[in-house]
Length: 265
Image (tube, rainbow, N blue to C red; front, side):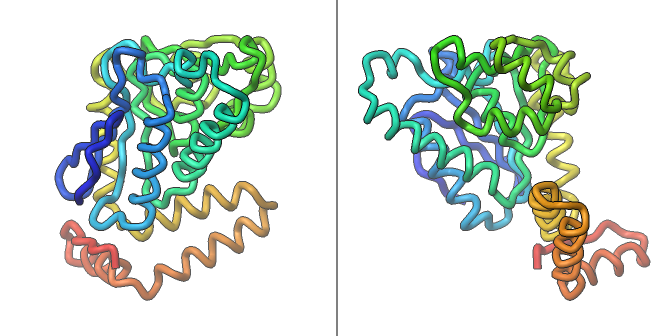
């Protein structure tokens, strides 16, 4: 799959089914400027429209210090209200495109994730984090507030009361706390988080790609409804898989005691 030569992202295929995306502005701790916002929006839109043979994405940051330090405040210094809102519209669309993307995305948080950096990680399906990573949604210190899904995704991950405390106090927390609270799925030793995330991504990519996407969709949308509506959505998603070639291949491979060869059809 061919991608544009992004100014702020490194995009690398790992075999036929995996893609590693690296936020690539290490000189400013991978802070999100307008160009990175545009690059991310373009990438997530492309992957949604034409995933081709890709089955899982791992998102990480360049360097060991930071996954992403959030919005680039140096670029924003002196920015007019109109320009600020215009930039944030780009950011918003990128966050929503990531959250809505059919392909699973694992955040491999290799260092600090603050502000929009944490919101980016929270917009992924789950988070693997280095033990030395730290997190914060500290926007209220700047006279603003989280605006990339942070108030919603953090509360869904750690609970309403803890999210209120973390956001209203602008309180930083470490990876171990993130694990205890349910925001982080797995802790890795420093320098190993990408490798660990790729192990998980490889396992996901070995499963039925249509099944994975339908299951992700069912969880994502079902949790936004009452239980019975969520279950009805699940059944609709399930029934779409019954007539797929992959369903037939999976059952056939099980009975033949071999690894299934899924085609995504």
